[in-house]
Length: 516
Image (tube, rainbow, N blue to C red; front, side, top):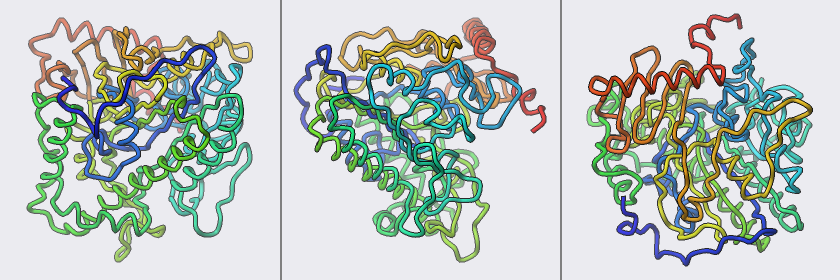
């Protein structure tokens, strides 16, 4: 895809100069929770995301970047540079007898903080942890010098529910009695720490992990009002509009057809309760909008430290849009939005969020594992406002951070040998130089399996048969090539089996059969 014909958000900025040794960048990694591939303006959305759009215009966008299909595995993979099974979080935080599924980070991996602390970085984390519920598996136990956030999984945005845990550094945190909104609390703390540590001579690393826009649908009234009525067009028209914007932006190709509406989603034209559906998507968009506002606050704090030029900001999502129909607290007369509600936007709108792909979070078709990745680093990125179509994976973020920080990945932690990094540094492509890239990439989550090799992707929706797609010409996975490419498919399945043995994958039925 030629990006010169599709200039995005203004004129092309001047090429940057790669920093010399000794000018190591500050690094901020921002992760959204349960956000679809097309949910930001710079990837096709109608929702307002000016701060992320500005990052894209001043940096680069990766169009073939991948996550691990679900929150816990993705977070484990991101912060260790390993496949999630190698880090001990092959599924969720359920304790298991299987080493690859122990439910918290194991002692054979190192986190961002554990690698960067010896290199002289201040290491900060704000937001959702979800890779270890109990001590000694909290962020401070894994090297982060400062922490504020949600230890457990998604929660009410206005108050802490029973069973959920928040912490400030290594102590439980009690929420204020009023005026709390999770997204704002994370943005505020991140901004305060950037202001505090950004003025010090040593560089800092910040991992900012939002819960937005994960359900429940909770947003502030002014943000909801901004979108009310904008979704009365319905998901059918809006999917086509997003797809056209994506083609114009260059993030997808016209030769990849828009996938048909999910078979379980009705046509909008025949829907009853359209006003209620509009409200659901308005709240979801408001959650993204509020996150973007918070990111703007973080970027303002960076600018005020005077170190914006040498600060790398990365933004990505932990999985594709979520199709879960979470209706457990819906009550007659209680609409989604306030603290008394607890619901999701469901498959109907998730199908819009993942435009133009198939399936969702949990599965490893493109809709489950494709993430927008935005990178901005004024001093280090050459030829900004461009698209990078080389495949990459969140395992590459750790390798990139180590490379840019001048750090060294240790051979052991507390005397225990570490698993070698699985990722590759993205520095060459950031600097507009040829990068080797991955020959093979692999996925497994709840029995759903995939492997990508060059333009080819084999994928299995558990417990079905394997499918084969040429992603270069058919990234929306519409034409299964398995029948005519059986030898190629068999090789890819064999490679996946070898990888599964290496990282400790357990057959899904066997994992499920173990006692709780």
